Length: 378
Ligand code: UD1
Image 1: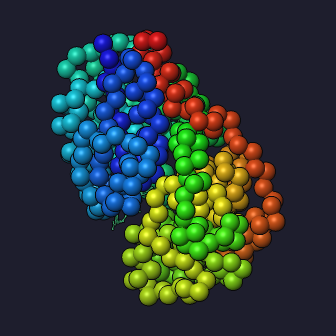
Image 2 (image 1 turned 135 degrees about the horizontal axis):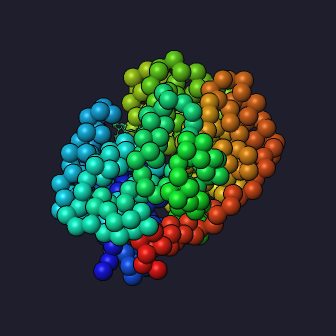
Image 3 (image 1 turned 90 degrees about the vertical axis):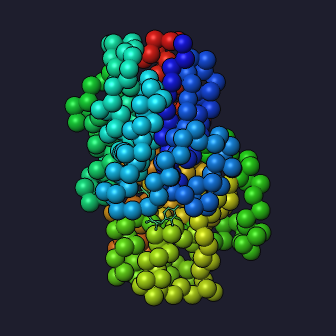
């Protein structure tokens, strides 16, 4: 009998995490994996391009929830996922990361009973196993919607797969049973390593008129950085100082684009190269060849760490401390002096630059092998 696992993806950072997991389930005879796309992100350049470039199969189920307030979006995912569970009767549901789709699906699964019970190392049970990949990350900042999503998802998951060593400490401090926690490394790095050669062949530098090592790469989308017009103006004004040294490439997230327009901010096109959100392969090429990456994204901190590119994190805290302790990341916060100091340290090459343990391209396989043990099917 194959164990049916529903894999959930909803927003851009989920797609690169789900791709290697689907392949690893596919390669294991004991599992049948199905993909559910909640539709939290729906623009071609936030969703479809990742499916095409990472060869993710067409979703088996599309919930098409779209945008809305946190409450509306979360509730919409829950309402639309509930009948899918009833029809599919999975043995497990796997969610990744910390977006609204992650907690919405986890919450539905935690209260769902299958028609038939099944055996696992957790005993005989009727509720599907709730599996969280990228568990244990904590920023300590309860103003961040992602922090709420992580804490709640972890607390109702049966299996917690951890990418950052600090995640193990966080979960132990929270009293989570050892039986539920497994350090497996980083599935997003599975995708990065598998796609690296293809990414390096991308013509994006020529297309944008850039030279390797002679530009910076900027991304900004966290609500606390972009939603307040004064903060947005302050951060962009600070980065504009750096743009005096070399051009800054800025693929603009739709949320940020709207806020820049609302605030009437104009960036000097002689120094800034503004673009729409960029696909995975082109973006990895830009990341790998930039002199410095200035970002508030969690995932990009991990990618720069593996690519050995220095990054300056425009953010107070990081839920991914290994990227600072071992990787190439410098945590600058949003203070102007700190950002500029971080930039100077980063271009001077002050970063440890080791690749963390198990960020080796095999994390998805580790997860599937561990699940086979839990379901006693190895
Ligand atoms: C979401 C995640 C965030 C992740 C980010 C990556 C949550 C709480 N946040 O934030 O953790 O880092 O994705 O991008 O889940 N929009 C479009 N097209 C789309 C999707 C959104 O134009 O395909 C616009 C809409 O106006 C929408 C806004 O972007 O209201 C924000 O989208 P949303 O999914 O709510 O949050 P993100 O800021 O993308």
